[in-house]
Image 1 (spheres, rainbow, N blue to C red):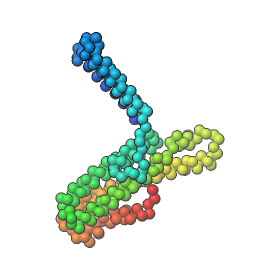
Image 2: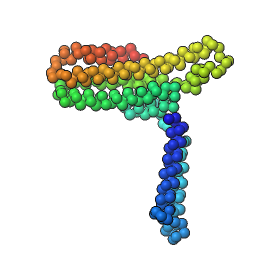
Image 3: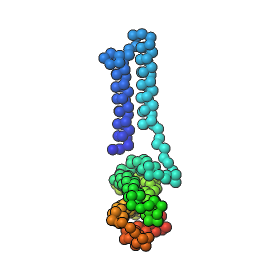
Length: 247
């Protein structure tokens, strides 16, 4: 659903809500407040109509005219803020599937984080070394995951979809074939980067699933055993990539 269609639906719903309310309040068969019955009813009816008009205009202004405030990327910290920022990019139709996948990944990551800490609290002492080791690893993985989301947002915020569509259709004959090719390569780099970041996040989610499975099989562990767990080795290797990772 496009942004404009979504706005139109909201306007229709607001209008219908106001109309239904007015009918309910002023219809003789319902509440039956009518102009002219007496001074009180007249005042109430006029007030209802005036309030309804204000609500209708304010609702339309909010939906159609008011600009959505974008939080600067540097200030985004919580999963909810990342989710909100991605939803603001839904108008980019060329990357609609990728944006939807990123939102779904955030939802899955939040659930896995909750499950992980629930399992850890059930199986280990919260102040114990085993718990702290797994908790630290989980937090580092979460940090890497949202680093990828931030990188995706960086690309989405500078992605010019109108220009991209123009290049893909090659409508402008004044461009040389070499320039069109260079522009095509540039925009393909945007798309490839986003897809690669999403692929890495899928790997992160998969590794968390494996870690959860391995933890569920354990009864007791020494610290050296934890560090040598296959899944922990994979996750540690992934985390170490962050020092070379560019947003």
